[in-house]
Length: 177
Image (cartoon, rainbow, N blue to C red):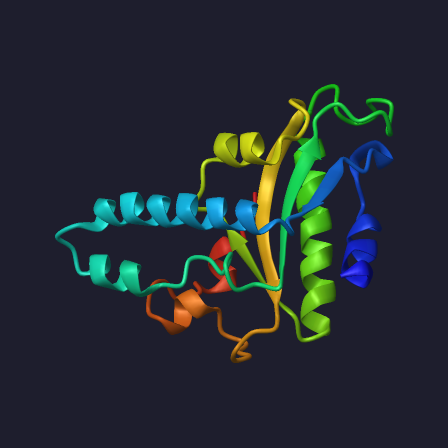
């Protein structure tokens, strides 16, 4: 984990603000609260697919590994960092959050090159997680990551393997003007 966090800390950031804040979640009570919260969100979200062929498929997806992952990290953006002195955010303050995503991406690549899997849990209420973790008010939740060794390694994302959504051709995402 130290190598992954160090790699993430080397990610580029707007104005060299380094706004990422990594909170390693090690307390069993916090994990249990997160499992209960996310499981409730899964049930609520599944209702959106009632009466469709996606309902059963949705319920079969592994949408989180909070209880099983050896490492669980909440990653926040410090929306008022001292570092960077405001450079690059006067007209695009969202660049701080984009910088945090760069750090997450860097951590993810560093993990994958070591055979470590990463899962991004997005079926949660950021306000609930922020309150649960008692972080400063000017921190915004960007990601909750489950990190560990996958049961099976595959170059094909799990959602694609399970028939939820195939990867679309990359050329369909390129535009010219």
